[in-house]
Length: 363
Image (cartoon, rainbow, N blue to C red; front, side, top):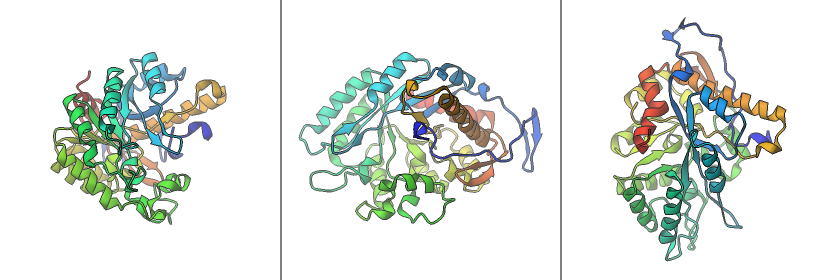
């Protein structure tokens, strides 16, 4: 539906679900059910641009807050953002939301580019920004005047990283895309089939001018190496969601990075559940919870029925992710079917909230 753009990246269904008692025996193990409200939560990657009357009850029901993540984009008109809308919503509901600003490489050739961006970010940090997002414009979209794609390790950006480190502001980094973006879409059960069908401009397989996955990830890793004191949250599992062993190697190598799975739960479900469970257990202090859910249409533009459907879909999608992380029920996400991880209450507390609070030094 048009009014649900970015709200949910794919229509998912819960398979094999049934009401649970306090204890339920599955073919895997005995799982003690846990009330979702018992765990404090922060959705570290959300895009709720406009207010909803149901927000207070919904977020209270889930015992949850969210980070409103700005995304800057560059087209023929200029740079577009939703920062003002996010600031307005955070001011309206300060108990529900945190703010994340953004950085884009447009104008990087200007001699005062870094100074201008630092001045803007200073103002937005004063407005409440706790992080700054960079995304796939770096490496895949934005070019400098020479026609080269701007990589995240471009030396012209270094003064900005120095500034953010000095201010103890973290970076949310969505650099690159899932490796499937560089592969043909020949399987409708591919967890990214729907996205690249709807957004062919990001399907690198069809755009030979876009640098390779390996080139972009290497630039990202070089940037991390050059900034060991900069706190970095690698969004979407660091664009390595197809292989948790690859993610693990990066977490072992770089002490300053964390990961979150927004819009990549399907990739996790598609891998062996024992391996994923072991990954969450080993790196329980380095993983946060994120979804990529949001809205981009004002409430007044939606009918009562549309709002009810929007709320029901949000409830279903958060419930599915809770089910995957906290139970061993059968789940299906983006055509990938497996059983839930059944993580312990201690790990759930870290992934859903404590790692975020420690990362940004908030309460």
